[in-house]
Image 1: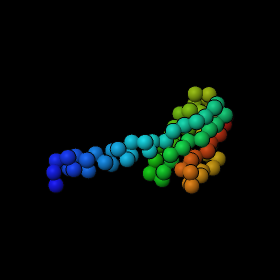
Image 2 (image 1 turned 60 degrees about the horizontal axis):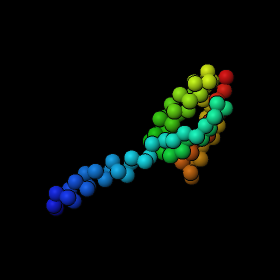
Image 3 (image 1 turned 135 degrees about the vertical axis):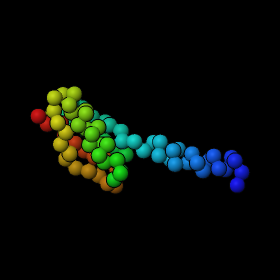
Image 4 (image 1 turned 60 degrees about the vertical axis):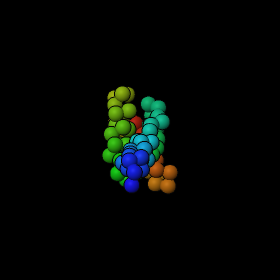
Length: 77
């Protein structure tokens, strides 16, 4: 195997996983976090909590959509 193929294989996991971080779309009342896989659900819940704390509220997970890898939450007092 030549050096180019070795480097490509070495960096492949980083390239594939680079766009997999949860992303947030929300208001002060709640929102949706997309790109939530089983291995990063905790990260998504922490992201929802951090968002809600900006309004002195806490995140309450209302549902999840495994088909679309999404987590839906409300910000409650």
